[in-house]
Structure formats: structure tokens, C-alpha cells
Length: 264
Image 1 (cartoon, rainbow, N blue to C red):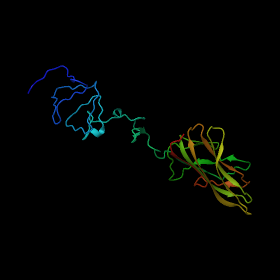
Image 2 (image 1 turned 180 degrees about the vertical axis):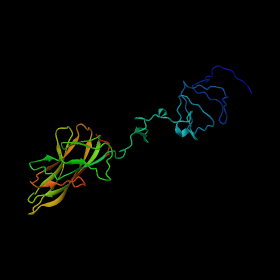
Image 3 (image 1 turned 90 degrees about the vertical axis):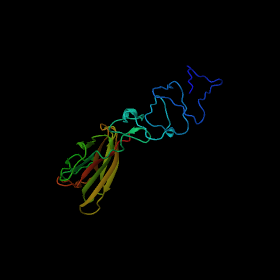
Image 4 (image 1 turned 30 degrees about the vertical axis):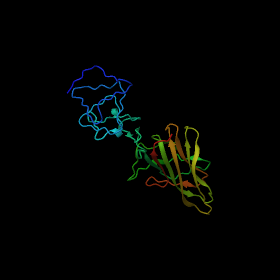
């Protein structure tokens, strides 16, 4: 076997230089460093198959050019080794588009229910908030989820941002001749101006009092707990028309369920 000692090999003409002939094997012995860090390497279109430990520095190989199992040098895949965008922590997951994101919805984190503890007559002289005889349900089997709602003078404050399902269920005694007893939901997004979002009505054209039910519902996107609030109200009640209440069970009740994160 001949030995050739040179410091540099250049092509005789042009810019292409070929080593060996098709079918030949060029062997680089152990202990030799093949430094191509300053060059542009073009890999063959066929699959690159290797055995043992192969170290590549500052080089990229398309996944189509590899077979077998690729294992990091320390046998671990940490967050620091991933190029995905987004917040990388214990509360997020890696999506198929190589981004980190929070789990959708994340389950129901807030559920609360309140009720009237005694019959309440509001709304006789126009729209009036339901602001008296209120308590959180406390009978056997009830359990709220999360912090729960706060109420002051009939104004309800949310414990956290999110999209909420709001429901009011009124058991109502309707005075004879009261043809338009109303139950309503109002919301504000600036902690000042309230807009009517839901209304239901019942009338009594008979000569005696009747009992009926009113239900109002609304889905409210609470983007700011300081400015986004709601109130339940009644309107056009006759003198003896009342929302029924009881401290031992629900007759008129108000429920709040956080369905998911805000869209705002």
C-alpha cells in the first residue's frame, strides 16, 4: 500500500474533486478529526445508515436521510433542547405544530349557587335589583368549585376571568291582574353602565293568585373582574307578586358556572 503525504489537494482543473471510484470504501481511522465546520456539506439523497456513536457538530441532516434510533448524548430530551415556541413549563403541552400551549378549557374551575331565603317583592316601581334575602346554598350535598361569587347590594362580582354561564330560576307568586311580571339579567363591562341581556315574563289574567316559574340565562365573557359584573332584577311586579324563597331548599336560585377561558 502506497502512502501519499501532502498538505493540500486541489483539482487539476475546475472546482470538482473526486476521491475514489464507485464501490470503493474510504476509511477514516480512529483518532482522526474530520473538520468540515467551515464547509457546506451536501449529503446524498439516499438514507444515511450508521452504527455506534456518531457525533455531528453544527450540521443538519434531514430526517429522510436517517434510519434507526437517534439518542441525545445524555439520553434525555429536556425543554431546553426543544425549539418549539411559547411558554415551556408544567402548565403547558407541546402541540403538533411545534408550539407550547395551555390545555383547552382546563376543566370547570368555578361553580357556585345562591338562593333567596325568603319571599321577596321587588320591581314594584320599575326595574329593581334582587339584593335582599340572599345566601349561598348550604344544604346537604351542595359543593361549590373554586372561590365562588361575591355579592353586594345585588351586584355580583366574579372570582376570575373566563366565560360564564349565568342562570336565574325564579319561583314566583303572580298577583291576579299582574299581566307582565319580569325577571331580567343585566351586565356591565365598565362597572357603571348596565345593559339588559336576558328577560322572561309571566302574566296572570285570572281572578286569583297563581304560581309560576321564570328562567333567565346568559353566557358572559368576563375579561376583567373589576369591570365585568352582573345583576338579577325584576320589573312590573304588582303589590303582592313575589319571588319565593326558602333557607332550607331552593325556590328561587342563581347559578354561575365558569365554562372556560376568556375569548377577550
